[in-house]
Image (cartoon, rainbow, N blue to C red):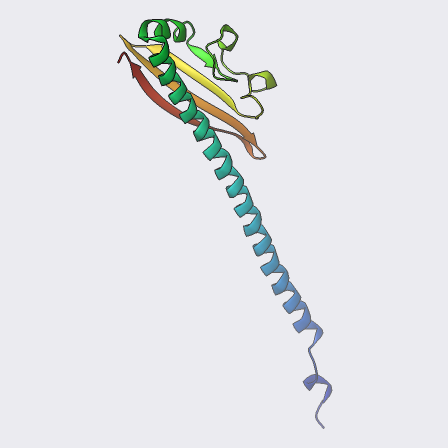
Length: 150
């Protein structure tokens, strides 16, 4: 006599294994999607930060050309550190950004733009650092350039 019950349908063991495999596959898909979203947000923020550094370099070059070297170099070296919430040579920006102070953020954003200047014999070495916060902590991008009398 053969057992006809064992030949019909799926056993509970097979169903549990199938559900476990489906759960593992779904977990991997969700994890990859979350990582992809996180990377996408980071890339967007990094691109924007790089834009702020480029914008600052161009603005500094324009200041040098429009003010003249002597006036520009005197004003920009009045402080070794600048926190540019907006791009203006204002005495109120002559300090290092405090990332807990919203007033130091670039206007309308959560980015902080620090500019360090050193005068090395007629050449101004400028380092622009833009910082921002994401869910996994603080990030930054940094660009350096030298400005000379042209």
